[in-house]
Amino acid sequence: MFYLCETIKTKSFFMDSVTFSREQIENLQVGDFVENCFGQMKMITSIHHKGFDVNGNFFVCFYQQFGETSQMSHSIKEDRKINFV
Image (cartoon, rainbow, N blue to C red):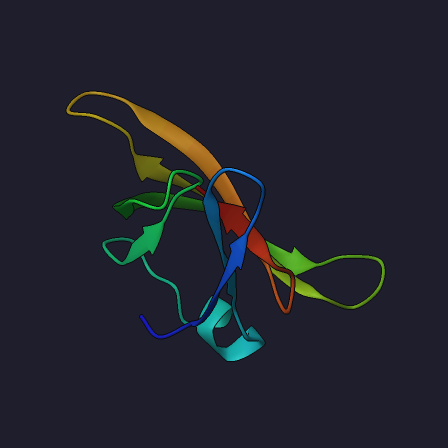
């Protein structure tokens, strides 16, 4: 998975930001690895929706591995920055 990443320095820590293109989001599949909100690369376990918002931006909603026996939901929208610590 290729993405644009920039690092932002705040008062006490660094925050990374990732931006995905429409093509990258359209090509996401179960088994791909994407960073979660904690900046950890986790596997997509299921994709439950792909579509367009009211402004025509493409997005995807999916579940990611979170620990050995649990999952967490996540969504990505094209050209929208995703911040994580």
